[in-house]
Structure formats: structure tokens, C-alpha cells
Image (cartoon, rainbow, N blue to C red; front, side):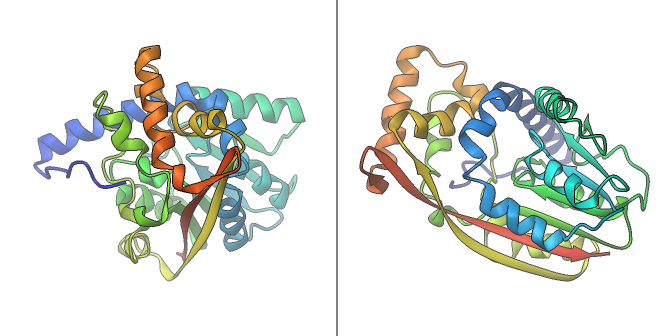
Length: 286
């Protein structure tokens, strides 16, 4: 996505913008929560698996998973740390926390708990966790550096943090979705969505937050959709524009669908699509 506006770093303006962005994220992901796994579980797996491999959580360790969504990463981490370990999943969305908690209860997973929290103000003590994770959540945070500093704060000495973000806009074939929505309603979903995926931006953020031995990996992926309906479901109902999308009339939804499908037409494969994407994964040590 092109950055459709830049932050005014006047402190008052930034505070107002940040507050608005948090509200958009909180209630937007509430709308998207019930569709999230249906449309994104498979698509995000390459980034999540690489993130977990970098983290290499061990038996007995304590893990905090920030912007955990429905717990796709949290539950895999909980299996790695075993009954002697513990995972806290946090998310700004009440509905995401409700769903992940229900899944944990339904599966009898006792070593994972979920709580609503702002990534920039974690309700956790200093030097509490061995591992801090954030899988594709930092793009939505008003101040990513502050969030990464929070990851650093809650880690024990020698602890490690791993974050994944979407890569460069030019490598993400679905990126027009934000402009398509914003021209119909001012959503302010993520004004700097692709910034962290540029060059070494996320790596520099980790270094600025205090992490050492920081390394990064950029991986290409393909988002596969079997139909027009599946492609639109992922882009609109199950993703970050869900709050704005729910304000559309049926006529406007149809218009937005048509424009989005036209934007990914070059990636058509039979009745569906194979849309390119890119992830950046960064790991650092305290």
C-alpha cells in the first residue's frame, strides 16, 4: 500500500491519530474475528512457521504472543513449551481474545491464557518472559518502536523477540485494497502499513529498542484463492478493513469487490487467483 497520509509529529495531533487508529484496530478486528481463520490460516502459515522457528521456544519457557488473533501462533508455542511452560496471548480485539480463549478451553489447553492488551502498554512485569512474539501485528500499531520496546522490557536477560510483518508494497499483489476502501470511506486503517517491510526498517526498529544480534529474513509467498468470493472474503470481511467495509451498502460493497478483483486480475489462475506476497521476519536478543 502507498502511504496515503503521513503522520504530523505535533504531539497533540499524533496522540489524536494514535487514539483513532487504536479504535479502528480494536473494533475492526472484532468484525473480522469470525472470518479470520477461514481466510488467513493457510495464507499466513509461511510467516508464522518461520517466526516460530526463529523463536525456538523450549520446554518450560514463558512466551508472550502479542497481537495473537485467534491464537494460531500461541497454540503452537504452547505445544513447544509444554505443561511446564506458559503462553500469554494478547490482542487489542475483545472478540479475538474471546475466540482464542474458547479454543483453548475447547481443546483443554491449560498452559495458554489470553487477555486484551495494547501492544504499546503490555500489562506484564519487567523481565518476565523468555520469548516475545508478534506475528503480523506491528503494521497496525500507531508506534511500532514503542511496541518493540515493550517486548524488550518484558523479556528476561538473554531472552529473544521475533516479529513478522508484510514486506514491500511492490511485492504484495493485494495492496490496492486500502485505497479501494479509503476512497469510499475514510478508514485510517493503517496509514504506514508497508513501512516496516521496506529495506531494513524493522531490523533498525529492533536495534533502536535495544536488541542485540538482530537478524532478518525476507520470504516470498503466494496467496491462493479458489474463487472471487474467497478473494473478496479475505480482503474485506476477514482483514483489517472489516470495520470500514461493514459501513458499506450492498451496492458499494459490490463496487468495491469489482474494483478489487480487477486489481488482482493479472494473478488469475483458472477460477481463482495466485496473488504474490512478501513477509519480513526479524529476531533479536536482549
